[in-house]
Image (cartoon, helix red, strand yellow):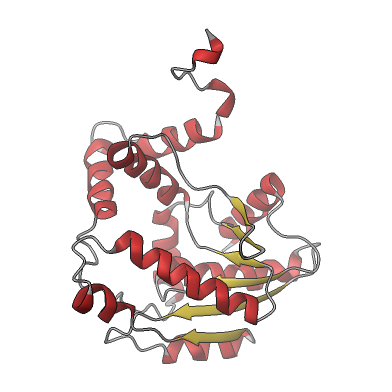
Length: 240
């Protein structure tokens, strides 16, 4: 956990993610990433110079099986306020709309429910558990499927909701998360979505694994490129 806390500290220093008086809602999907973030922020709170509060929110899709009992117990043990927001997103997406590629719409609808719950709980920030691999994958998704060079930001202010999104795990690799979550035996809940593992993001994950067979440092190099904003060499007419 020492490495995780170090990554959070660096992200907070680089991007001013956490400030005095913050109340941060951690979006808990039930997966390994969000459970690690929740536990790590609880520990980080003890050592941070900033005084802040954290709570946890899970937005369900109405799909089964999705038992959150053990996550509720974990939050009780950590003395973290936990709210479960039920929804029928699964029915809307798969039965009513019959979406073939529902990920984007699903994410948008879940975000709306999460932000509403966060505001009702008095939060001014929402924390997502996106890690360094997510940043690289999002870059390739944007490049291949949208024709633009883009990834998510470590910190984003949402004027419509007056909330700030933060991503404290951006310097942490997924491989380290997997090892730590397995070691600590967090109560991970399997994603009940019927297309889990068959998405464009999963395709990009598999593609990166294949590339790394020839170029082992692919992810590290791409992450370095994302941080090296002064060395972009794009087709900018303004620089001609």
